[in-house]
Image: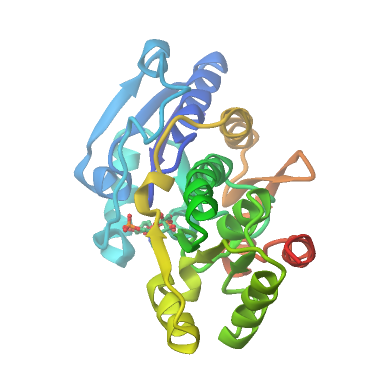
Length: 319
Ligand code: ADP
Ligand code: F6P
């Protein structure tokens, strides 16, 4: 293999740049040419390519976002779009492709692999919603961003004796809410993987109020629904005054944590090695801190489950 391509696709995540850097530097170290494809699959269809040299990835390991930019591309979902993509890659003599992105991006990579292009995926999404890997690039940074925000909100919650609901991202997965909620001592965590009832929430809040605790933080995963609606239901039942904060896209940006930089560097390098070994339709995963080549078909076909023992622990600790 002499030339490989690299692209980022779907939602950006902190650490994607560190992964691009690892792909480019490992590829060059192994004697290959590395081509950067801008704006995900839409850049692929538009032929928006740039040759990457060692300097092109200097000074990016600490930066959030992705220097290659990212996009969501409907045209690539069609047979015609995928055929066109294969022709473009062939015309540029690109024999292997590293796709850094989430579940949707891997479905695209799989489609290319089925058409004969060697593809390896690197999981990059703050949601941590991919099966076959304990962690995705960007998740740790997003969790730390949430923690920083909730710690600040807690200052006001205690000073004013108020209840706050904080809505966090994660799409259909509760991982960000669960991990951040445990780490900042949230009194209640709502995630889509666990049923909840307003009665239970109110009972828990009431119990702690009776013990003299006058403030509370509820971390609500967006997959459960809107925190504003949950607050409305609690207010209907109790008449309590509450405040709602929707953290939004601050969770997607920022300088990646050490954990994400290291994970991205390891995964990016491994993706190149897998291509060199002639592997395709694989995703680099991390399981018990060991890198693994996971079948991409399995990764996209199975649903990810968060570690629900954390949920039980958080409930006990927030008694
Ligand atoms: P993520 O990778 O973060 O899950 P998306 O679900 O938006 O993000 O997917 C990113 C892109 O991957 C889409 O815009 C599309 O171009 C491509 N894609 C998603 N699903 C498929 C699919 N089933 N077949 C082919 N390409 C897909
Ligand atoms: O997948 C990352 C993510 O930030 C999700 O947590 C969120 O639901 C979604 O993307 C938001 O997408 P957009 O940036 O298109 O609004």
